[in-house]
Image 1 (cartoon, one colour):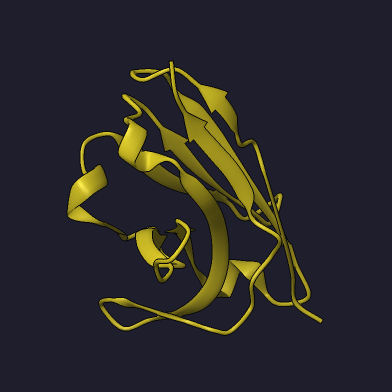
Image 2 (tube, rainbow, N blue to C red):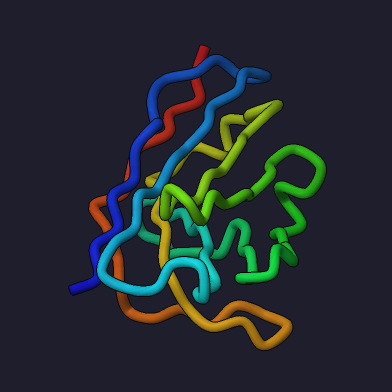
Length: 120
């Protein structure tokens, strides 16, 4: 079955950086689009960044220029490099696999998420 394991979250000061990782298994990773979402209490999960199997990327406006999504098909892992972090980036971050049609369409596969806390 599909398994997605997020890691790399933690506490960081405003302006700092974190790199999240998502190890995937149970499907053909290299053929799948991948994405990062985030969720804060009381709000729905929101798309942060997505990457197609061919490498095309898409970002939420709020993170453009600060976050970068990448993938390593040899390791079945997708990454999210987060720079210049702001308090409003604080959330639980999840990865997901899905379909790319010019935009990302997620499957209903969610890991446990990883908490990112941005605070001084």
